[in-house]
Length: 309
Ligand SMILES: NC(=O)c1ccc[n+]([C@@H]2O[C@H](COP(=O)([O-])OP(=O)(O)OC[C@H]3O[C@@H](n4cnc5c(N)ncnc54)[C@H](OP(=O)(O)O)[C@@H]3O)[C@@H](O)[C@H]2O)c1
Image 1 (cartoon, rainbow, N blue to C red):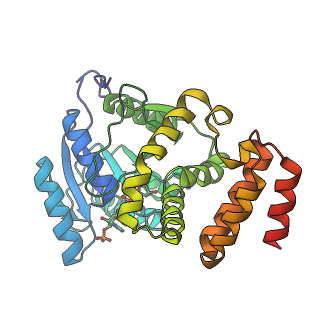
Image 2: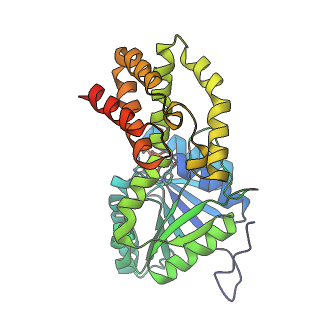
Image 3: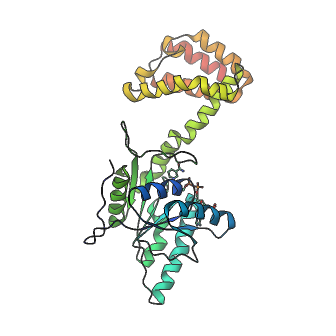
């Protein structure tokens, strides 16, 4: 369950937050942080009409100001960058320039911490802000955020993990915020981030790509995508439940575990008209031969080898 945060001792207050960006993650975080009692001061957008409009919509939801880097008050304790990975360094440099300009004119600079949420990139992307005295970290939630869905970070069965790395004080703050949101943190060394994110990409984005491939296979049997989706959801859901409770080997059923090579030959024959689905079928059947309890392994191996060549 989410817990209380106690970062600004002795004032005993939660840090105020400015979100940079108003896309999928920012939309989720703004609402979740707001519910957890964090004050969102600003949503910082790019200087284009559509970006400012999105920032205004999000700011209205959580009682924040929609601003650009030029008009930002930068009066929050924490800057949380929710921009695409390739924009993080540029956005950090821009805000760092604004903060440094304040230092030069002896104005107070307020942000003490900055986070980004890239799974692949390290907190080094935020190093431009260190020149302005800001401590930096990355905090990546292993969860998918899309428009129209608001996932829970904690639930009956599971808690969403956040991979954290960076400066000590900033990672400490990140862990406290994650706990306040109901998630759980784990430390991820910088050197492992790219591999971690390759895995993370397979858990959801490429899983969706696989589900789209299923629709193509279903079309070979004459089912429209919506119908295929509806008809296949019960078996997909049950498979995930089995995988979670029993592990992969005990969740494995179908022609490969039975050693029905002739059935597999028929599949490969009808999928010839759907080469993309066939390619995925063969790649996954090879994984099954390597990793799962398959009968008649030699015949199946030969069959997959012959048909693939
Ligand atoms: N979505 C997820 O499921 C998810 C999960 C875990 C981690 N993350 C991480 O979260 C970060 C954001 O991803 P997202 O999916 O939320 O991306 P997104 O939906 O594409 O949103 C990106 C936002 O950043 C804004 N932006 C781009 N450059 C900017 C700049 N220089 N200054 C201010 N705003 C700028 C974009 O606004 P305009 O284009 O309108 O200007 C847009 O509002 C990424 O690092 C990603 O790896 C995402």
